[in-house]
Image (cartoon, rainbow, N blue to C red; front, side, top):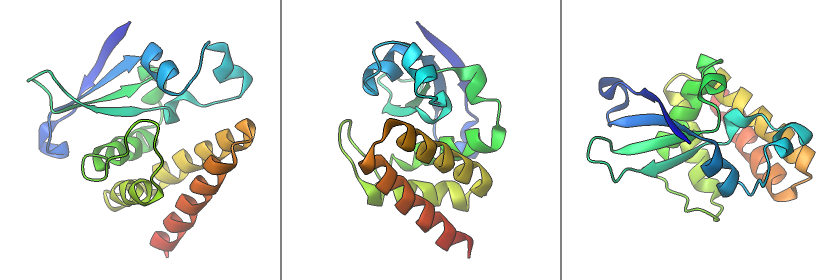
Length: 154
């Protein structure tokens, strides 16, 4: 089921963006067959987000989250993720592809919007997930993103 969580303030985000909850889309995109895998692998579902251009004329894009209420629990991380996803308008990464440059540029946007603590928390959760999954590519990419964040902080 798809649930509208929130319509973001267009004056702040400069686009008409809605956050929707769609567990099935998140699970399909991230290759999860059952919800139990999230708990088994200790994956924090707030980091499993997607951003789509909208076909609905009322919105420019949708940010898709797994669990809207949980996504909103940490406002700093929520905003960092939102700004990171907005960055993908300028630095897109198509489904199934990997682009470290684009990911770092999107992280920079979240950082420059003032959400460095949320971004760091998000990247630390991503690194933890990569360790749990024993995914060397995700570990390497996330480590590079954390290094880039540390350089921005100095």
